[in-house]
Length: 91
Image (cartoon, rainbow, N blue to C red; front, side):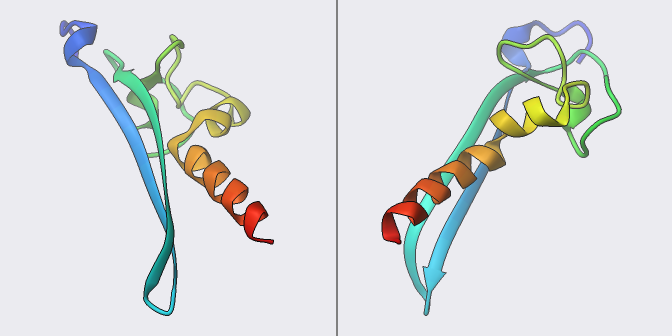
């Protein structure tokens, strides 16, 4: 990605979580985190694309951020927070 401007390095992580019972979808939750691809691989944390994904508002990749910060904003945690809130209303 070296030499490419930020505008063409836009990236998004997305997680869709569905809850079903007996073949019937009860709810669907969608979590995303926007960012850009770094110019180079940075950081040892995480897995997959984490060392090249920089969430908007940060100059560090997911591979460089602490696990606490990453998990607080990740696409998976956003979908799971929605599920948690939905589940709490059903109890």
